[in-house]
Image (cartoon, rainbow, N blue to C red; front, side, top):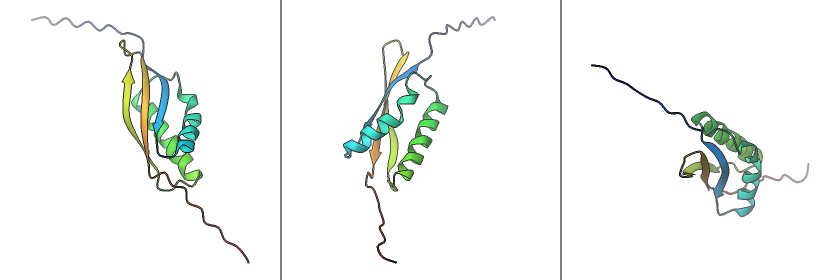
Length: 102
C-alpha cells in the first residue's frame, strides 16, 4: 500500500490589527499604540506569547497591577492569510500610593 501525501503551502497568516475591549478607553488606546510593532508579523503561538508578556510588563509598569489581558478571538480573512486579534482587558484600575511629608 502506498500513501501519497501532498502539502500545498500558502502564504503565512499575518496579524493585520490588534484590538482591545476594555471599560477603560484610554487604556485600550495605550495598548493599541504599544502593539503597533506587531502588525504584519507572522501569526504564531510564540508571537501571541510575546504580545501577552509585553502587555503584562507594560501594565505593571503603568501601575495597572491587577489588570489581565486575555485573548478573546482571532478573526481571519477567507484565505486565512490575515488575522485580527481581539483581546479583553479585565480589572482595569490603576493603583497609586502617594506619601506626603517627611
